[in-house]
Amino acid sequence: MPFPRASGILLHPTSLPGRFGIGDLGPEAYQFVDFLASTRQQLWQVLPLGPTGHGNSPYLCYSAMAGNPLLISLEELCNRSLLYPDELHELEHLSPHQIDFDRVIPVKTELLRRAADRFSEVASDEDRAALAQFSEECHFWVDEFAFFMALKNAHGGASWTEWPSDIARREPEAMAAWREKLAGDIFTHKFLQFEFHRQWQSLRQYARDRQIQIIGDIPIYVAHDSVDVWAYPENFMLDEETLAPAQMAGVPPDYFSETGQLWGNPTYNWEALKKSGFNWWIQRINALLGYVDIIRIDHFRGLQAFWSVPAGETTAINGEWVEAPGTELFEAVRQTFGKLPVMAEDLGMITPEVEALRDEFEFPGMKILHFAFGGGSDNPYLPFNYVENSVVYTGTHDNDTTVGWFEKMPDHERDRLQQYLGCISPEGIHWSLIRLALLSVSNQAITPLQDVLGYGSDCRMNTPGRSDGNWGWRYEAKVLTDEVSDRLRSLTELSNRATASME
Image (tube, rainbow, N blue to C red; front, top):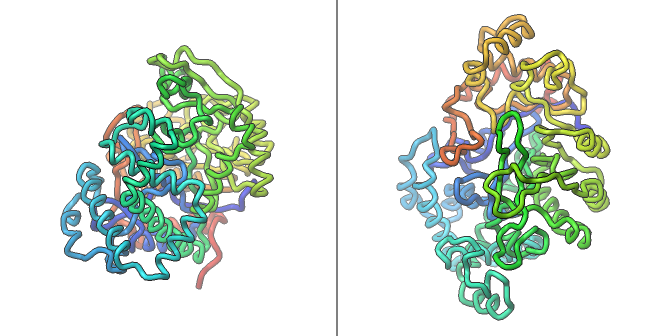
């Protein structure tokens, strides 16, 4: 659906400032919302909110529907006497600029378990009733997720395909025995989902009260080592003998890679999904709409046709395009939810069929200014080629920062950029691109916070293809100065993207 003219900031909550080594849903999250409101933004875009696994990527989560417990505010748990301030000291001396996941995860996980134990012992009847209501409302996913995580802990973190066959294949006797054995740990994981939900809903309401909508990200594929594949194997292309992916997702060879990209996620069994009325997808979207107001579908083209690579391949070369029932899926979703607040990540190898699927449901596509200055005047990322029903970005979480991009760009592209701009803003190239995005005809304009701050490549969020060192960037609260706020607010008002005044 087309959206009103608006602008916003891309920032994942892990990047928020705070005392405990990783951004969370505590006071600094509310202060960031205040910054958005003061600069007249209407949108806050986040990355997937799920519980991350190896590599800490929010695009490879243990669940497509659960929240990440690492985002839970420890201060809020202290306020409710589920933790005590002197228990938090071990996390108070970590870097404010980068997340040290190897140190944060074990310490914070232990603190969260401690809080769950205390809740079990001292929770009021009202709190227990709220947990029961949450469990009922989220029954489609929360019970299986809590069980999956408890099983994963019991098996030393091993992938579910490495568990004993009877529990990997969900045989009823094994399921019953393990549920009884792991009841305490199952409760812990369910409580943490309840607490994440409670804290997130409070923050979301705070944003709504300030006329700010949250854009959430839905990765098209799920991790093989996830509750979704373990609990619903019929929805995925798996080898019946090994339970490994029989068909793997990726993208074919292109200008950027001679061997393509082999992601390794199992592709969907679309025939089985169609027979169920796309129930898993509908539940997935319903769960996400419980967290966010607008959904960005990552790798949207895979819902029209996807690159499928047989098991055993080590590159994506020997794959093939397989058509997906995108129209039928979105029709089923529309029948459930009505008009869909969806954006399409339509980057990459886009065909007329992909564009037709996007346009059939009036989903805005993405325009990236970092891609605009190679090629000729027909480059679709040049602003004069935009349509109103689109979302323009300076760059995304997968791009370099604008300052880093400008420093590295080829001379001929830099010349073309300077010719296009006429002159570069004395405040820096990042403000030139922000201005270009905001003044474009695209209904929505999103800027990564790193670009608002003029940061370089060392503050990049993710470098695709790099296996470690990603997802850890954070900012300090003091950098959101009055000067930065005033400049962003002025451009937002100039471009007719501002919220109504709250005064």
